[in-house]
Length: 324
Image 1 (tube, rainbow, N blue to C red):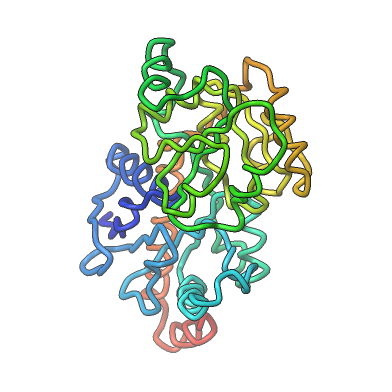
Image 2 (tube, rainbow, N blue to C red):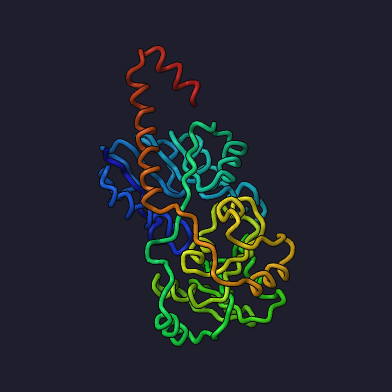
């Protein structure tokens, strides 16, 4: 099978970038399809857009789209400037042969909000990148020296290019705590105005793994998530996790983290500070598992057009009108 894969998000510092990079590598390792990196699909059997920004309104071949969350539709007031663009993208999603989501929580929203039937939705979880695992004392000491980190600290991980109200980074910095807070990820000027925190800026995966390993706990204050990679990554590095009790995080972590009420950031930080090692292991799901599940979705998408081609012309026309 020849698959066109929109690789543009691989350059992103957000979670969608991690998803696209890890999935693309795992698909190639699986060796069950030829992957062509392009967002203009031609002479391929299936097109996969791993983000809604790449979804095509009129794809020339069966299209698979990964929907990570529906935040723009649920938070109209916070996405006013880009709402028209999002509406067009979600219209393209509705026309896709198959839709991939990372959790059943998002699957339910896609079914109810976008009115996409269950049989066109595939739940395929994400996983820690292969390089994110517990590191040695020497590596932890080296990264602590490199970024001037304290001996004991709480850590938050994510991109800080633009303020994202869902992530609640600024409110987290104002919550009561007794441990230093380290914020890891690429920044914009607004992040440097936050008080009483340590910023590392962008880091490599080796550095990130060592920072996770050396942290007392990961604190994750998001009030809405589609999956939540940092908590899973932290667990893979042996670090305890405290998160807000939202559906996707409850589903993904499944008893592996301390859950706190969404409206109690002081309680969230207290839970993180009270966390003890050893942390539970992360979910067993890997990117190889995700690749094989995604390949199954590709085959299903390709079969849609094969079925239509095998129909009698009159029946095919009626089916296309119904699907539209």
